[in-house]
Amino acid sequence: MARRNRKRARREGVAFPVPFVGIIVLVVSLGLVYVWLDCQCNALGKAIKTLEIEQQDLQKKAGRAQFRWAQLKSPQNLDAVLARYSMEMHVPQWNQVVKLDRPALSDTRLVRSRSHVRAYAGIERDGRDE
Image 1 (cartoon, rainbow, N blue to C red):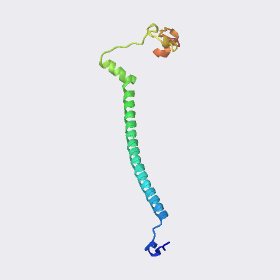
Image 2 (image 1 turned 120 degrees about the vertical axis):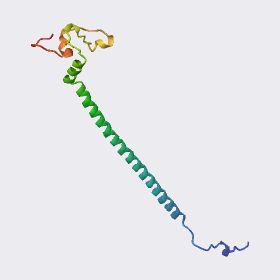
Image 3 (image 1 turned 45 degrees about the vertical axis):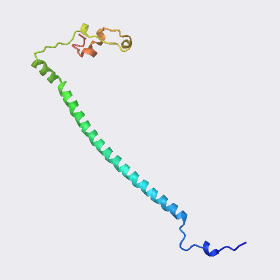
Image 4 (image 1 turned 180 degrees about the vertical axis):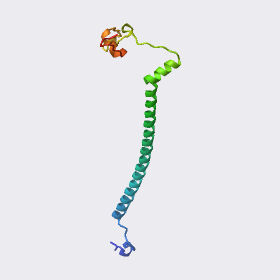
């Protein structure tokens, strides 16, 4: 057998350690994931902030609309509107009030009763229903 040439097998320079490369790649990839997550969190935070501002604006608008609606249906305003249009309204009589009984809603029966007039017509005079 021939002898090996050991001079050829010998390499000159520094050998680069493979585990070190793996650690570097892992650290760089973790850094990139951290930066990406930070960007996502910042974007979501901005979106949440704009939605909170929009929610506050909508709550203010809803409050204003509820106030206007309460003013429109106030007794003073209703009287003023009726006077403006020369309309005359009277309180309904007991036989003009129709009460839908809760169980009867499913089979569409109408029930007329004097006992429910006060609850639906909203009148009570001298302790008796009219």
